[in-house]
Image (cartoon, rainbow, N blue to C red):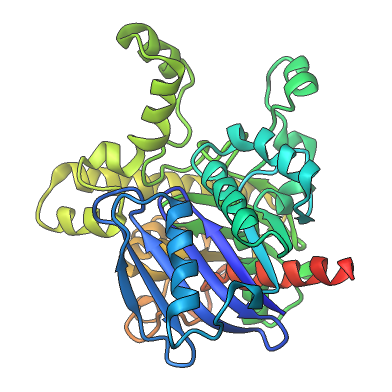
Length: 404
């Protein structure tokens, strides 16, 4: 089955065309800085994956996807010549609430419930839903599947997912911790088990998905028992543009002092805070690291705050687990930034997480799953290249195949 995987982010679009029988990627696409004048989209095809860059300045995520579909049909290197040659579409959806605890084929009732989930991930779900609608219009006969980031976290116990609020807010509005990045955390945990040569069911792992968004999950015997993101992806770590966890009284204080509307305050917390808000440089950690290297003190402060909150989260989940065998680093920052891994684990060595500085070097190691701790580190440190798209393709294949 040829599955087009669509991973719509808040400011990015990742997509692959995957042949599921051989678990082979036929096309890869990455659009970054979407919605800005600097937005670009790289598209490449098997076997050599030579990138072609397209200008997608000021386009929405859905418009970038429409451009990608044009490239798929028109490019002579493309493995298809028409959209009808795509057998199914797998969509990554960040938040499924309590409506969705597993992947589903998108029919009309499911599409209506997806709309109800948009408030739970205001940066991610709306562009993903826009992509679904656009493809339903262009490819009405092609089945679509929704694969949810929140589904992996459905195994959390009530003590982890409930908030200390009046119970009626859960009863009436289902306010609870849902988490996110579940597809990535699940994949990273399994790949770490492979690296360690042990069954996932026997391990206690702390998985760290660190990109523009970020979350950390305690994975005990293959199941999520707690995670840093909450009711929405705003809770938890400091992120590219998101504040992460703050004193909630700050919100009402600022709304009163600056007469901000709900939407304006939501924009501050989700789009103007985090690494961007503190550094004043960028939401992209690569830019912030470069600025810090030139002596920018606010950039250095942003990095220190970012690292410190990750260290505290790892320490918290170490306390929550009955045992911790490994910490797993994945996603853009987790996989590719040796400097940030160095900073993070320099403060955790006393807990038994001891980095090997040579193994941590990324030279020639990008995309390589590996252990980067010293041989006798009590808790291993792993780097795993996340492949959410392959997992989404496999789940899509499984569900669509059942349709007959």
